[in-house]
Amino acid sequence: MTKVLEFVGKVTRFGFRVIRDLFRPPFEGAQLARQLAEIGSQSVPLIAASGFALGAVMTLHTRSTLITFGAEAEIPTVQSLAFFVEIGPLVAGLLLAGRVGSGIGAVLANMRVTEQIDGIESLSVDSFKFLVVPRVVACVIALPLLTLFMDFSGLLAGFVAEYASSHISFHLYITRAFASVDWANFIPPTLKTAVFGFIIGTVSAYFGYTINEGAQGVGKAATNSVVLSSLLLIVSDVVLVKCIAFAFPGAAL
Amino acid sequence: MNHDGRTSVSFEDVSKSFGAKKILSDVSFQVAAGEALCILGRSGTGKSVTLKLLIALLRPDAGKIWIEQDEITNLRSEDLSRVRRKMGFLFQDAALFDSITVYENLALPLARLTDKSQNEIDFMVDKVLRQVGLAADKKTMPSELSGGMRKRAGLARALVLEPKILLADEPSSGLDRITASEIDELLLQQKTERQTTLIVVTHDVHGARRVGDRFAVFDKGQLVSHGTAAEVEHSDNRTARELISIPC
Image (cartoon, rainbow over all chains, first blue to last red; front, side):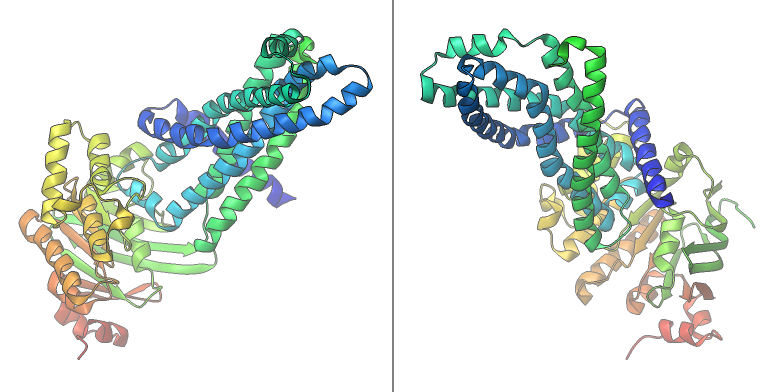
């Protein structure tokens, strides 16, 4: 138990250091741009493809159930609300935890093992600001944007699946999809992924940056990054959903 | 202890442990400005740890470390940054930042720590790369370099800020005799042409005798012999005598 508390304390302190160093010059604009390209742009195909597949599957599943209750017209509404409120943010977060979390953990751990981090420090460059802060900030910025890709890919796939069954027009599908969507169903759940991004970036960077084992530790850092950031992401989702429901009563379905 | 302008580096009763394992025990030595000290010793006797303590990548458990007039063991990060700028560090495996080119590795400290213009940075990088014979490889990624080239690129990065003190961790390890000799020549050049203080950890006695003015021999975390080659050769310590003698 003491070890768990000690670990939680260390990760929390690491997270606070990220926030403190974020506002301390020099600002790592070039590194941030590099990380945004790596974490954000390069994750778009994965997110869009997953969202599309998930959207199509969801429509296929909900269709038969809703037809039973004569609620076929509600398919676009169910699809959009499900994606905007929960599926988009959560699945985008989990996918990013898998793709980016393992990458951050492994890259930083490898840099530690091969003394690259010591090399940067020996040049009087603050390695934490140079390597960790831009990666965490890139996760915070990229995840809400990637969530939008996930949401709209899911919606597009929902339309394609529905069109294949009922030949619904695109205009009618979109009108029905957004008929029940409030800003409160869209903005807070999308923005909550910034917290997911902070968790993924911080936890993964912690495992990579603080590794004190050899090459074997690199794989361990990557695995731990994915496992813990995914777990924390799901747990924090529960808390954030309650917070959003409290702050925006209209968002509760 | 005298920390006048002639003393470049000073170790005073420094001890360091990792967990229960004692790595260094009450080690003291001084290096004068412009002098080359070669640290010899069997593997795991604390030689590389000594270099990392000198550049404050590690902190000692006890003792004091002076770099010129600065006692570095309790320095704040801003002051430490100022002291580190006086030093260059050639790591055993070069430790080049592997996601950027050789040029960017060298330009990084110049762009961040000096107010040089882009043209001046280009000039400096070109000059140092020419010095180490890598002028044609500035756009190459570190992963595309051979072992010897990586070492030379690492040396170029260590030299790009024109340090007063150069620390080198096994500069000839893993290299053939000719390439190792070229690296030794570059180190020697720094000492003779720029009066750079050298502290070199090495297992290569030939190279050490060529570069070093004085020698420190470590055994089981202790400094067992310190002095010129002749003094170490006549040391009471058998390990020191064996390590400094040139193999047949």
